[in-house]
Amino acid sequence: MSAPKKLYIKTYGCQMNVYDSERMAESLGGQGYVETQSPDDADMILLNTCHIREKAAEKVYSELGRFKGLKAAKPDLKIGVAGCVAQAEGAEIMRRQPLVDLVVGPQSYHRLPAMEARAGTGEKVLDTDFPEEDKFEKLARRPKAKRGPTAFLTVQEGCDKFCAFCVVPYTRGAEVSRPVDRVLREAEDLVERGVREITLLGQNVNAYHGAGPEGDMTLAQLIWQLNEIDGLERIRFTTSHPNDMMDDLIEAHGTCDKLMPYLHLPVQAGSDKILKRMNRAHTADSYLRLIERIRAARPDILISGDFIVGFPEETEADFQATLDLVEAVKYGTAYSFKYSTRPGTPAAERAQVDPAEADDRLQRLQALLTRQQREVQDSMVGREVGVLFERPGRFAGQMVGKSDYLHAVHVADCDAAPGDLRRVRIVSSGTNSLAGELIG
Ligand code: SAH
Ligand code: SF4
Ligand code: F3S
Image (cartoon, rainbow, N blue to C red; front, top):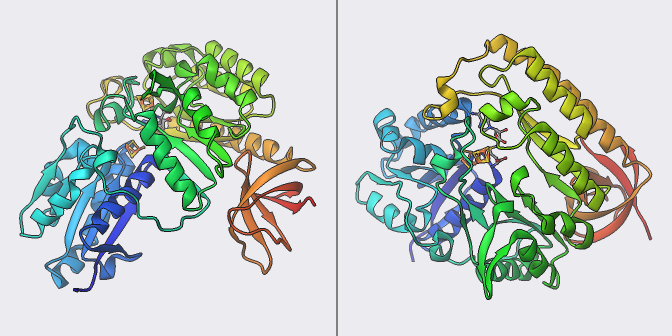
C-alpha cells in the first residue's frame, strides 16, 4: 500500500465552515488522505473561505500567494479553494491566482473526491452549482473514531432573508433543512463517539422545517427529539433570526432540560430607519419585546448579539439608538463589525459613512459591549453552574470546560475527565474566563 497523502485544511468564517471542513476531510479520507497540521508537508491544501467582509475575502489571496514556494518545490501539490469566496468568485480565483487547481462551492462538497481525481491529472476543476441532492447524505459517513465532548451539526443551510448588507443568500443559496431522521442518526453517531454537547447549526437555524415522519418539524420539535438521546447532555443552536423565534422554541427554553440557557440573536442595529434600510423586517421595539418574552420563559438566559456600525446613511443619532438598545438588553457576549461594502448587495449602492466616523462608533460600541460582557460574567461569581469539561488546563491538576452559559471555566485540583458534566461553584471572574470549584 502506498503512503497516505496529506491534506491541510485551513478554515475561515463561521462555525458552518468548521463543520464543512470536518466533513470534507472525512470524504477525502476515502481518497487516501490523512490530515496534517502544516501546509509544508501537504499533498493537497484546501482553504475553506469566508466572503462576509472584504478583509475576510482578501485574506484568501494573500494566503494563496504564500504557497508559491511550496508549489514550485512540489509541482504535484494540489491547491483548492472551498467555501463562500469560491462560490462568490468562481473561476475569477484561478485567473487571479493561477496556482489554484480546484474551486468548490459550499453546496458541491460531495463531488470533491471526483474533483480531486480530475485535478490529479493536471486539469483545473471548478464546481459552484447548487445541486438538488443533500450533499451531507452523499458525503462519506464519519468514521467511528472517538471525538471530543462537543460537536457542531448542520441542520439548515442558506438564507432567504436578503439583509441589504449580506452575501450569505448568494454564497449559500436558498434556505434548505435536512430531514429529521438524518439529523437524529448523525446525532446518535456523534454521541456513540463520545460527544456530550451538540450545537445545531444553520444560517437561520430557527427557520428549520425539516421533513419528519408526520410532516415538517420545527426546530423546537427537533430539539425535543434530540432531548431523548441517552448520553447527549446538552443542546445548543445558532444562528437565529428574531423573526423566526417561534413560540414553541421560546417555550422550550423554559422546559427542555438539555437546551442550554444561551441564545445568539443578532439585531444588527437599534435605529428603525437603519433596520428598515437593512431589510431586517423587525424594529428595535419588536426585538426588545421578543427578548422580554424569552426572559420570561427562561430568566437566566444569556443573550448574545451581532452588530454592524457605519451602515450607509447611519447618523450619530441612529448610532445612539444602537447604544440605547444595547443598554436595554444587557448582552452576555456580542460580535460587532464595521460595515463592509459587499459587491452585488443592495447596500453597496448607497451613500457610505466616513470610515473614520465608523471606526470611532465601533470603538464606542465595543467599549460598552465589553463592559456589559464583563458585568454578566462577574455576576456568575457565587453561583452554581453545570460545566462540561473539555481538556486539561495549563497548570497540573487543572481542567477547563464550558458553563451552561458558555463561559470558559477553570477548576484547580480537578478530578473530572474530558466529557464529564459536573456541578461547579464559581469563585472568581478573570478577563476571559471564570474560576470555580467542584461541588461534591
Ligand atoms: N446568519 C447569521 C449570520 C450572518 S453573518 C445571521 O443572520 O445572524 C454574521 C454576522 O456578520 C452578521 O450577523 C453581521 O453582523 C455581520 N455581517 C454580515 N455582513 C456584513 C457586512 N457586509 N459588513 C459587516 N458585517 C457584516
Ligand atoms: Fe445574512 Fe441576514 Fe441571512 Fe443573516 S439573515 S445570513 S445577516 S441575509
Ligand atoms: Fe462567511 Fe460564508 Fe459563513 S460568508 S460567515 S463562511 S456562511
